[in-house]
Image (cartoon, rainbow, N blue to C red; front, side):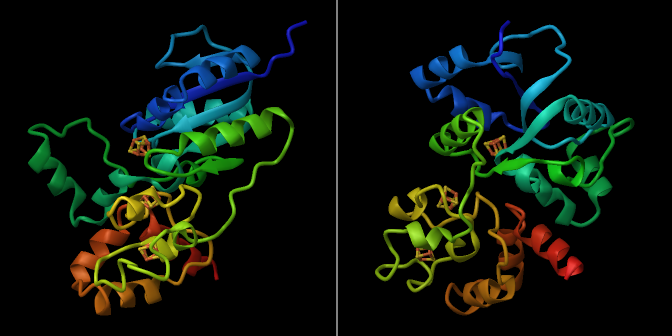
Length: 254
Ligand code: SF4
Ligand code: SF4
Ligand code: SF4
């Protein structure tokens, strides 16, 4: 009997960049494919409906009723469900629209005819169904994905250590962007990417989302007094990758 685990890789609304990162593993991805049965992977091939997934990997956000239905069906037939990338983990860049005033007015500016277009608030996958594991990033770090998926296949429980990007940053203690007066979200962002952005002269945008227990108020003060941003600029920065949303939710649960 074939005992290979059945894996599904599915996309909801997003740019599908996280799936592209998986392809970017190249030969290692092809080797991984020999260890599993693919139950669904739209970017690779259309497959007949499979009744059970050992691991379902979901990227993107469910913004239509049809996508929400699909997400619930996938949850019900999966042993392990992984949220893949910032869209699935924290709502991603598309969540910005929820903070930009009257959403329907905004929609009318973009689409000439909005009849029939549902316009719900953006929710992460874990706000809609139970999620077993999250792989953050916009896009994900392919090496981290590869480690996690292999650990799962070996029956291990993968862990992403809760520490800030600053700990992996080569600018720590010297040439730190914040100390140079540039906005950098390293202190509140979950590490694991190896801090490539500060290493390449770009401040951290926080694409891996907030780590647990962040002090958002302290971060805002640093952005205000060190990076000299005004209130509106600060709000825009923390709306991109779930910092604001996660912070509001966690404050309510305290
Ligand atoms: S997390 Fe980023 S790269 Fe991944 S699907 Fe969303 S927008 Fe694209
Ligand atoms: S440059 Fe950014 S990520 Fe690096 S230490 Fe400073 S605040 Fe942290
Ligand atoms: S440094 Fe920040 S923006 Fe760059 S990949 Fe890491 S978390 Fe994302």
